[in-house]
Length: 418
Image (cartoon, rainbow, N blue to C red; front, side, top):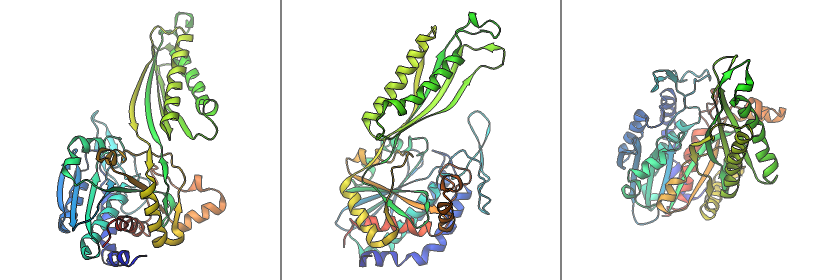
């Protein structure tokens, strides 16, 4: 650890208990995308208490905090705030019991099943340490709390609401995500890290009829079934074995009874790819297969293919990633790793893209190390270790929070030299 990092992180012991309380509070009070009013207020209040110049309500609920520390680089660190419509099953004393009423009037459970409560807590802790040790660094530190990452539209909303004119232009943007690795683990990766994600809603049109008279119908159920089977060949037969991609059909819906052939069937699917070439190839293949199957079935109407959400790939810039990896190696030692490609997706990269600056994004572990080690010995990590978006996903308090605060701080100090 450098002397500068030692100086800044020496304050962690004094704020650790407060950060743990903040995490428990956030975990108990999750909020869905663009509804993070309570979370955003806590972030804004914490920044103001440390002397940051704070702007609230960017893109709806986004929060920007700027701390000037003299001439030098500008470093932006970003955390996402939103939770998921998941019913928590962790059994924790601070587990969420929150429900909300959606636009259709249905009750919806809400949980921090992805770890954004960890992200908010760690950035809050980092922001406080930077404010309490301004004599140890030079430059400007920017803390950015983003709404609605899970919907893929929060970064865009902040940009559309003037983020680039409200914030000083950063020299680099930093971000991290808690993942199902042992707590204490930190992993960087230059180049491709997180996949692009595209969700599609496909409607195929047939001609309805009585179930006993299929000759009078064009059966969209059969069309949908054939499309689902054929889509399984896109990755296995059209991409090279060295090109990673995932195509998952998550929903097929048609009809309302056993003896009625319906007019339509709806397929919903998700695609994960790592570069523009494979992304285009897979999406084109889907359109080709769907169109051909409908034509082969004599569908009376062309299929409708709608992209319902889209996340860009997260491709880390080489130079800042090398710089952060070196700083992590010096600070974390054997806990600093090169992380594998992840099939999760993010919209964070839209922020540095809007500023025209480089970025780096890394992962930290959140699973109890003893539990993870036992599962690894048994070869049952995939079955026994909860993953993000699971109703049982809840990172252990420590060393997860200490690691996340330290990682953000050490990374920021790799630019903010004295």
